[in-house]
Image (cartoon, rainbow, N blue to C red; front, side, top):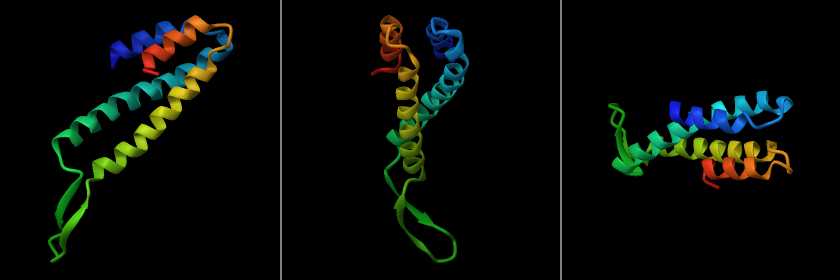
Length: 106
């Protein structure tokens, strides 16, 4: 996470002052979600999508892995933050936009 923060800080330093604060807040959330999405993806790689359950009261069956629902929510928010961060970069700062897009993986 620290490596991501350092790289993002370098990119954000090139933004105009009036955009840097909001971009910094969004970048912090982007980095947090990046780490969590990766953790969830790794957990899902080791577990099935559908799991069995037994609530101890006689109910048993199959259900969606709760990690999957959480992953789907986080990956959607993560993608939304990606797009918002890229849009904050002014059109004339094409080199900064390219660097951010490369960092994000767009």
